[in-house]
Length: 113
Image 1 (cartoon, one colour):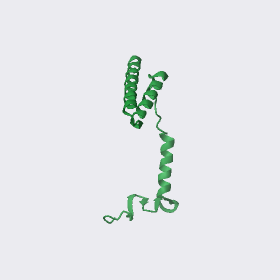
Image 2: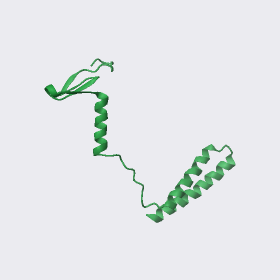
Image 3: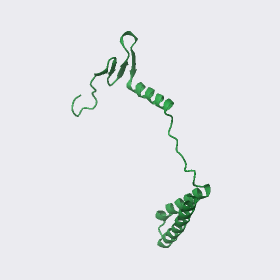
Image 4: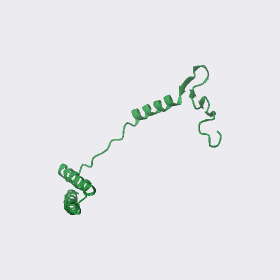
């Protein structure tokens, strides 16, 4: 491969019967050789990974009750309102509400632990 030229890919032997180039991948030995593009190769590898590993499942923390989640969402809504406000008085009011809601959320979470 030439320095600075990423468009050219050098054909090299990786293992017996497996050659990789920019366009095709040769898999097999002798007469029963199968030719596939690199995109097909990556697609096949992705399909195999999905079958064997599956998707990563996000786990919701079960020790937090739905009421606490609702309080966290309310706190988040108040926090989003603070930078959108132009009036200093209203901004101070939202900051005070946020502090109250923050204390409430921390109390609820600490009681559930």
